[in-house]
Image (cartoon, rainbow, N blue to C red):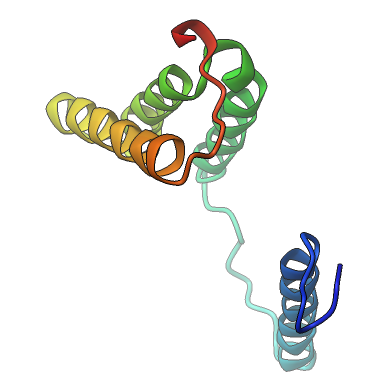
Amino acid sequence: MGSFRHPGVGFLPFGLSIILIILSLALIISRWKKETSTKPFWTHRSWVRPLLGVVILGLYALVIDTLGFPLTTLIFLLIWLGIIERTYWLKMVTVSIGVTLALYLIFGYFLEVPVPMGFFK
């Protein structure tokens, strides 16, 4: 993890996890004695979109090495905007191409982060 003046690679995740634990405990303590509402947490079939989101993210993580960052990100954004966000097709295609290009330029070109290229090697 390193030290405060010379942090290592695990310093930021460790610090963020400590902050998350503290905030979670504060939320639990603040809700401890309050009355519980009778309103259900999930309304009828409102759990489907979050579940689809988790499945799509999982598939993205599984195929990014095989298909490469540009193609996988483009497909991921098309599916996400089409199924989860339910946007119309022109906006879906425009945003997907623009975000994929911007992410590749930022990470692959400017920051020189090695991204998996898949078929584009």
